[in-house]
Length: 103
Image (cartoon, rainbow, N blue to C red; front, side, top):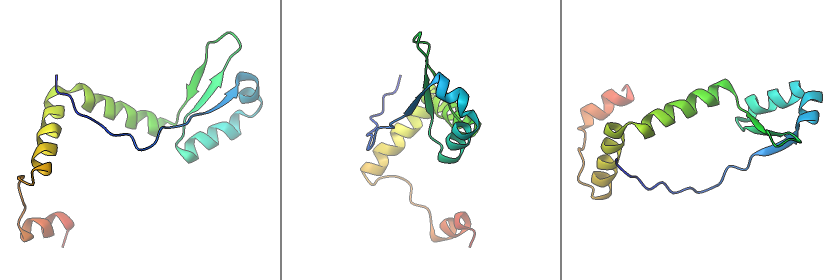
């Protein structure tokens, strides 16, 4: 398995609310989760907490997990990071860059 170091510049701080408050203000909380793209932890007295996340964010997380679990993709990323750090990677021509940029 390929290992890549990822530097985290900030830790996601998840807002939290009780199950009762969530139930009372469900519409507002759901709108907040979707608009801000920030998950919401809902705590329950019995310890069975759960997290609310937008469908768009869920799909993005699933795509990320897919990439992280794919050894071939992770090796390609690691190789690319290595050549980038050494400045030894492929350099596209001006024509290729213009084509990519749609010019």
